[in-house]
Length: 94
Image (cartoon, rainbow, N blue to C red):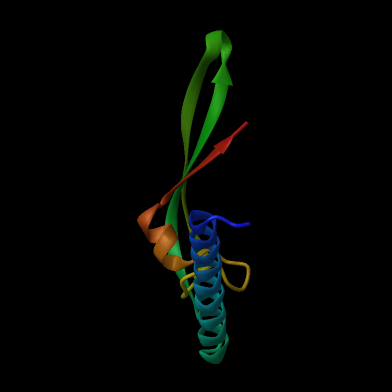
């Protein structure tokens, strides 16, 4: 009933999902075994304000030091440090 291609696609999907779950579980275990390590990252905050005529103004709100988790995935309610350090600009829109 299933075609050969459909079986391979299903197997690939299941394999990728299993790899993701194993990686996330390992990251969670290491994070908690290390005592939930956190660090800080400095981010730049910007705000986009809509103006008349379909224009937008961008305002710099300053820099903020935020806590981050030392892990691959978000853990303990914090974003991972590697993500915040690679993308230090955060935008807010009104």
